[in-house]
Length: 74
Image 1 (cartoon, rainbow, N blue to C red):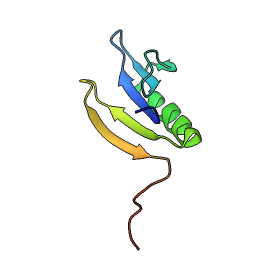
Image 2: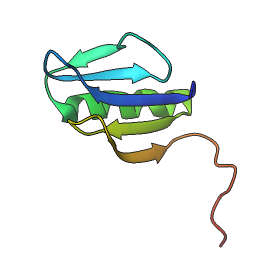
Image 3: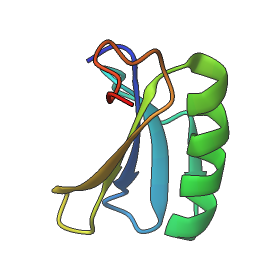
Image 4: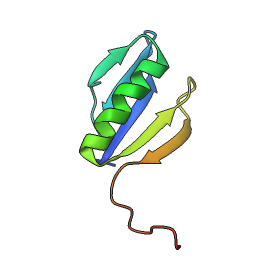
């Protein structure tokens, strides 16, 4: 997905913020919390979906900061 921002573990330690489909990280962080905060701000500016991965690489949660094609009723 091109319109996503990912928080992923770095194989050398720490955490990376990556744009979806990119091979290189936008920025590297020592803590996951710092990577999430930075990525959340970027995701809001980009109107993209934020995907947060766990230490094993699996998706833990997603937050959408873009236009929702299927908003909830009510």
